[in-house]
Image (cartoon, rainbow, N blue to C red; front, top):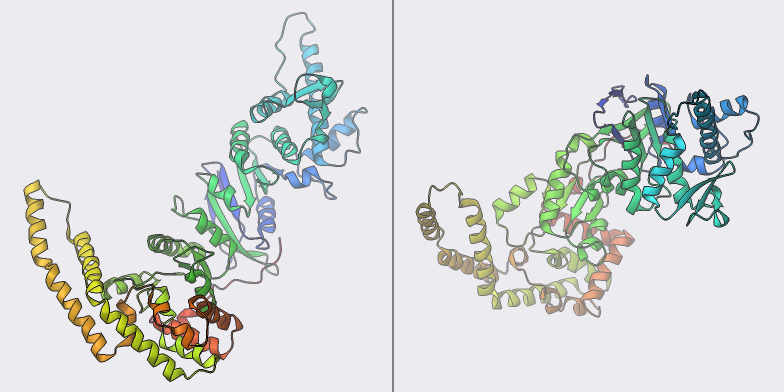
Length: 538
């Protein structure tokens, strides 16, 4: 089935081939999803059927007047039968009435068919199919047909039975979905609004698998902002609605390429923001990264992903889908012991790499130290010189250890890049390894690092030391907090965060120092945003 989507902002349209019978329209609240689906419905040539548990379970002033809808069928039934109530307030009540009415019609038709005395099997009714599906979901909850009523019980005892109105909202939603779908026209496009509403996440997937299996002739279009629902479904055509121009009645939307490798976390980011995304290391609650970077890169939505590898992979995947989201997004990883070639490679992949070894070293930048010292009325020159002398002294003491760590990292990288798996036999592999070790010469590499690091100390090259020195005790060991008039390391960090939050002149100085440390300018730090027209609520 080919389905044409509503017009984009530029007037273009996409066509979806719904071979898998499932389309998910997703977007943040207020992005225009509801108007998008209404326009979608209005332009379809195929039969259309709508499902909304929210509107069905609670009184709705505007009935669904689509041909073949529950409301339309209910009006038709009340006009044909005098014993059907015409004042049922909700679509859910109308549905249960319709199913019981059809049950009666089914029995009458069976009696007429069987009037000549020849035994004829009783045809399966809508209600039969609904009860069968219901029992698969709630095996302990029995459905009884008593005195023209639909009752529910934990056992088969009708004395303890209760009406459908006393079911939980979740149970009502399941009954509604199973029952309403029986009335959908053949080969209909079924539009489902907020499919996860009222349903427990543990059964949501099973419910919709069951619903879809009950009507293999139908195509289902789900409208949601629920990322969990999206990630739990497979083989979907996905439409991301980002905005709506009410004046032109056009939308900013994109169709996700099929078979895209994008995680639930990235989906959440796509749906929940209209700003570029900055993926960072660390956890979202406790890491310095999560506290610092949102205050420095203020034009980005910052998401913590934990490890360096996750940041690199997420940034790659996100940018592979640039045509889908149009967001100029980046990642940030610590420099650690990467050389200039590795750093350039990452920066070419839109990964920001600081010119310091790790996040703690950013807090030791000269511009940051001087700003905090000034704020607390300390002599910034004296404070910085004391800190510089201390750091150079620590580094001098650790030179050989640091040189060894850098050597180990460099050797590991070279081995990863240079070992080719295409060897005809073990002898060739052994030969290659011996030659590689001789070529690399780890001892010479180590000695060169030692010489280079000694040169940093002798020349007082503080910035170069920050670039190569991985030592988390650097900050407390430098005594920078006390020199600035603060109690300890935590108070120093918290003071930097406080300054950035205040967003005054001092914040500008700190922000400038940090941005400059990444080898970028303020233009890159203030990321361009996609051109999205006025957004109206759904």
